[in-house]
Length: 314
Image (cartoon, rainbow, N blue to C red; front, side, top):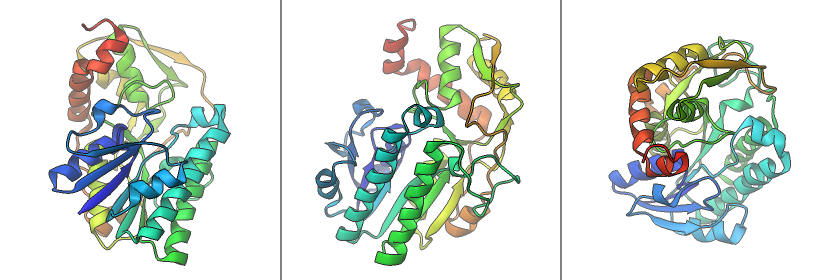
């Protein structure tokens, strides 16, 4: 079987690509390396450097594949607030190009990486798939628009689609990005020996899911008969204050915390109801957050790219 992974040189995409290869898939990766790294591309994968905004490139990459895992995206609330046009171009137009290619080639399944950012400020916990969708940032809007395009393509053109709404993903291959997830940002500050910054009072909660579980969800949903939208999280939550303390514990480095003002577009609490994914394609989040954070800190401290960027671990 052959699979195309857009954004396969990135954090989540590279983990999915490695798992597919382990399962005997032929893997083709399309990535423009704007946020991914060539070193993330598995040795046995075919790599095409290009963007999903380039329609001809997408058509070439999708030729002859059985499954498409669409992860290429502009990610993050703050980045989208700073540049909403870029966000929409990548997340909406890029997704339409991938959908068109999937329609033309008759793929068995397209798995789209959506986001819990589509929900906006949460009204009930835990969050089920039918929670009101009122995004608070251009990022949430673009991910919701692309998700709706996926569902329309399934309805109109018969393209089998699964949309996976990720909560806060962390793990191996996730490197520092000022716009990115709080965990690599905290790790960066711990490795620099400077206090972690928490925006707000730190009692806001997040559902952190390990990237190994996200890779599992992608592949299981692709190989199942499931279609439609599904939450992908751990089904547990932790405060940002407790996260900071836990990261100090697993790293063995106490750097302390500083507090800043709340940021626009950030939700207060987050907790996924993953029941639909459990019943739909036997999703089973297995990663304990303390063990996952310890694995992550061990990896990032040994990562050559992180070492080179920080210049303090050589």
